[in-house]
Image (tube, protein in one colour):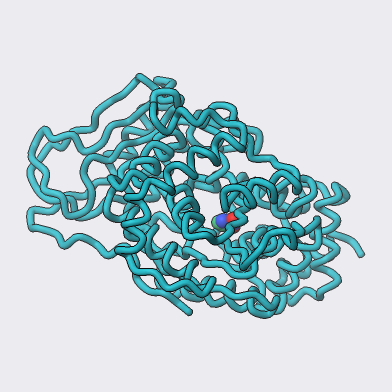
Length: 430
Ligand code: URA
């Protein structure tokens, strides 16, 4: 079989066989297919799409590219959650310690920033000393001790996703249903959970801009998981504006800690509690929002988060002293030039501004600047007066600043009429 022929077949819109899909995934993972051919293949898939059977085969080939975690030593049902990608999405750091405090086990394999969206692994690595590349034994040991751990893909675990994900990020081939579904689900199946909840984002800052596409993605992922004999649910959530007030790696860790203290922004709390509730439901535990609130007030989730940082090699003191995190001291305020109400706050523009500042990657090899980001002081429906600070931009290099500032300014649309606060959670798909 020749890669050239497979690329041409997909470019011309034909359906690929299981063998052809396995050839591409395994050949690329083993380094036998070069980046330029894989990039062309991904672009062909982006334009021509894959049907459900091809998407299932792609997911399974990606899963089979590496090992699976053996979780038999962990008692009880093992859970996982995954977001389809958004801006300001620090939800994992809030959900995992809370859910684990109810006694369930969560095995989470996460990714890095993708396109204009942030990545859990990049955010975690803003904590000095934090390790996300864990051996299988260490991963399982940490989950056993505190109820959860977060690891990145490795040469052994979901290696195909690790390579393809990085290439998609640099070749504008992220926004495709089959590529997203296979990337997410192959990681989840490799990590070995019995049941999982997908947080499927919809809106201008999500990869799925409209409701129909987001629902399609949700059903596609649920279907693959069920065919594989596992349980799953999907939560459709709003990504028209960023989640919470903080966007950027260190800044988002700070906001997650605030939420674990019970003080975070309403939208982050609402979505986190919804995901905790649905995850626990899959484990057979029925809890209400007020049970979750009491758990947060007990301080147990915050203690677990601290212990988690320590066990993965990070400095747990960042929880009590956020100034131990790298946060740039160079700050510019963006002020409003008129009175009104925030009618729109474009999440994609804010995500792209963060990438411009160095908080995300433009090329595969780029290093992340964990200290930069954007603090959103005004969000949709807030009243604004002339001169009010809309946002603060934390930057390292002046040369990146002008483009980022222009994007932040363009993200805000004001109206003279009052605006209803938007919903955070749209629907739970069982
Ligand atoms: N998250 C992933 O893990 N993969 C994608 O393709 C998008 C979001």
